[in-house]
Image (cartoon, rainbow, N blue to C red; front, side):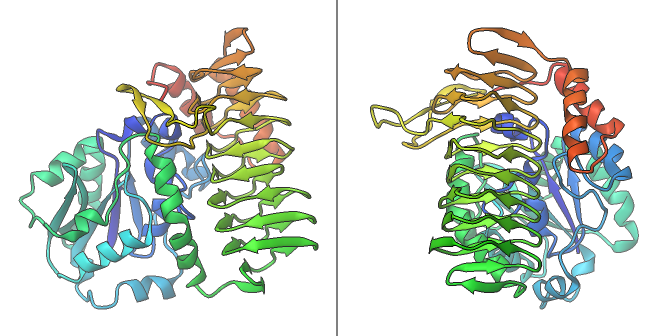
Length: 429
């Protein structure tokens, strides 16, 4: 079955987190949506224009700048693939569409499977937006159909809504979750992570080293390590240093490194090849980012190729213990959350001893230092009272140096993405 994951016209409301990557390539729980949907078949993205152009250019490297694969056939193992499709024998006649704002969770998988079991075209809407659709399209017309879908961009959602598909009005509307505002990413992640880790454990490729701690092949744990509660999944090639304390649920990605004496707390997901130290709580650190030293990262999101310098502290709780305001495209909203830290964009950096207030966003390729009391726009610097701008060429130079340290080549598509982002795309929230 062909799978198409599509962005709609509401995706920009997710703000800094999706400026430089598709919403379907955000880590929520212990998966990105692209990775999770790969169990149903090859996945194609229909995304905003600047991201589509980057994916096309990144095909030379077979990896997008945020770490996501760009191969045409992005699937999990054939064994898992065939199991998920049992009972849907004519599946090659259908195309599965999933909204890129859908939370990659066990509930989503069950909802999709239930819709597929109806063996018919259908459409499931959530809050007035298409969440899942199944369309009949013969395989011999598939390539042309996919190109037509890509040409629609964020208009694909409206096209699906106009196809007179069977509307599926059921309890599934309350099971499938679409994130609508940037602060909703935090609660979605917290709700999804334990079920997502259980799905990973169901793959059967992990060894339980000690109670609650599950290691993939070539993962290394240097004792003593304290596991106070699980589950904790450590992917292939990752390394946990000695004197680390782990409070699950936690997911640690491939080739990541947890430095000695770190305290990794509940609801934390650490992406591929990250280096992490200090204290981390209920946060997502996307692939290829560093938070190597002491400092506190709480209820926060960090993009790819970001560097969180030594002594950086995020505030995640107001002194009044009240709910925290979130700055969004629609203005300042009450997030409804008592705990809300920072959203730090792809390619962003902090200086040593940076203190970041609750709910602050640090934009794509931005730099923050000192006391950061307000949002830092894309390609700008807030250096404790001194403000300046960063050019995309400067950001590209820094990115190239970071990539070289990981043995990855900067390609023209990376620089072109930065140039497009700096040319006036909206920032904030």
